[in-house]
Image (cartoon, rainbow, N blue to C red; front, side, top):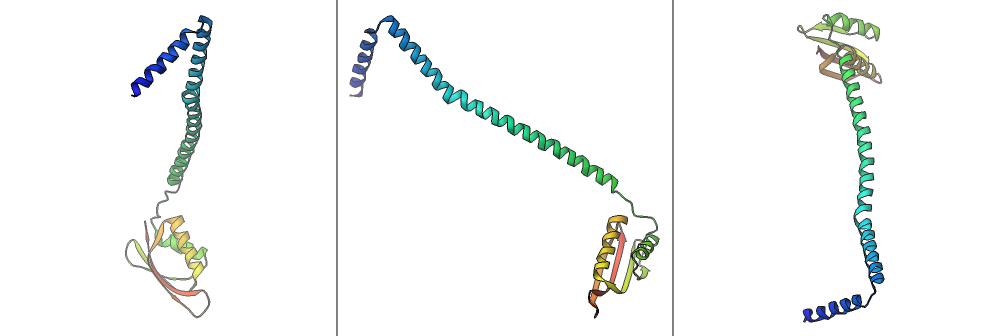
Length: 166
């Protein structure tokens, strides 16, 4: 039944087309070609151009991010090279100098070749943390064992710690 409806529709359009003059046929053909070109422009070309512009912007942003990552990587590598301080051969003298510089008193005993035990009868907890931070950052000496007991005085502790050089 669908075929019988299509055949008369084709015949109707074919008859309508035959009734047009050659000028009208050319005008209708041109209008159809123009409509097809406009449809192709709206459906294919314009979205592709928008996507191309968007991707170009993303590419530029990603290139900038990559260049920044390379700069940061070079900076990190430079910092690592500059910060590669070796522990001094005489850890004890360096430790004594740092204790004197920070004006703290401790009993210092050597445990073995790489470890030293420090005992503070009374030290401000903040000063102890500052000392440990300075030792670790500047001369690569780090604690391996720490025991701190609060004293009656505010912010004061009795501390025993064992340090080693990296």
